[in-house]
Image 1 (cartoon, helix red, strand yellow):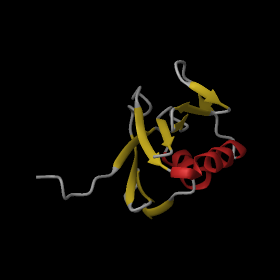
Image 2: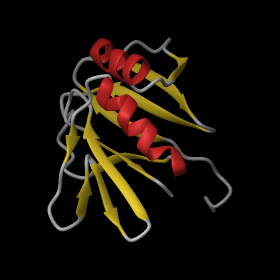
Image 3: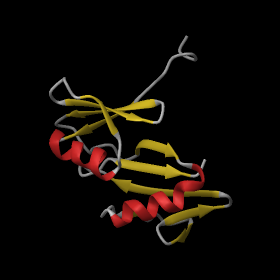
Image 4: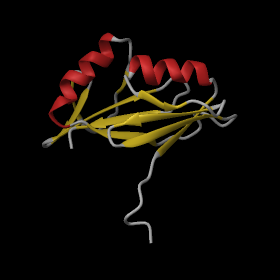
Length: 123
């Protein structure tokens, strides 16, 4: 039924202007549509990230968005850090700088201004 349909990630935020600045200026995503007031649709690769204003922003305690960035994970992590992004560090995995390593897998986690957990991995 849905196997041939595209999907998009969706993230709740408390301040749409602040979120726009973070997702566009800090993360470098392109605005696809911002004509809906409290909703911004951002292009990320061949998919979209929908950011919308909600009173429940930041209440998710798990990953909200995941990007597979392949071999660029070290460079992207360094660029984000230089842009002021702070990274989450979790116990139970080897940590090299801000990058968690488990075998061949590399992972980083960081939060948007509302506390939504964003994740990069090298897959």
